[in-house]
Amino acid sequence: MKNCEIIQKLLIPFTLNELNEAETKVVKEHLETCLDCSRILSQQQQLFKQLDSWGDIEPSIDLYNQLKRKVELKKKHLIQKILVQFIALKHYMTVRRTILGIALIGLICLFTYTFDVIHREANFESPDDLSKIAVIDTNKNTMPTLIDSILSFSSAPAKQTKVTPISVTSSIENP
Image 1 (cartoon, rainbow, N blue to C red):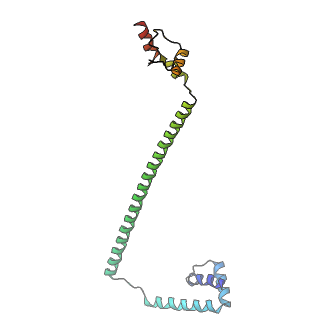
Image 2 (image 1 turned 135 degrees about the vertical axis):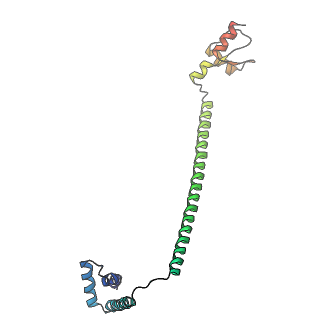
Image 3 (image 1 turned 60 degrees about the vertical axis):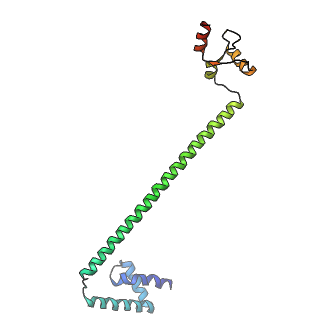
């Protein structure tokens, strides 16, 4: 039966001589042994003869115009559908970019916060930061060393100010 289904699909191309030699040979061999497929081929050939006897049919101008309008409406509908899909895709991409941007900003903030927490827990100061900070004890008029500045932060004297080395030098020279 399965073989018959394949052959029946090939019957119209067989009738119209559209099969290659190998396919034509297979169909002919099958038709010699299968009465059902031979009967179907006979019915198709009779149908084709009746259709050929009718001759060419020319559609009226009204039918042509109706078909033309329907095609144009279908084309407009398809174009509108494509535009709607494009706008939806554009909206989706904008939303996606926004979400990705927010996620990226969130990751940057999280990284910065984590770095700051680790930095504070370790009491780590970079050498550049330490060289720019000087603590002046207002009770003494001398410029402290870097070690004095670090120790004064931990002992928390009453009056401390952070100044750059340039302003420390100028304030010591001009008491």
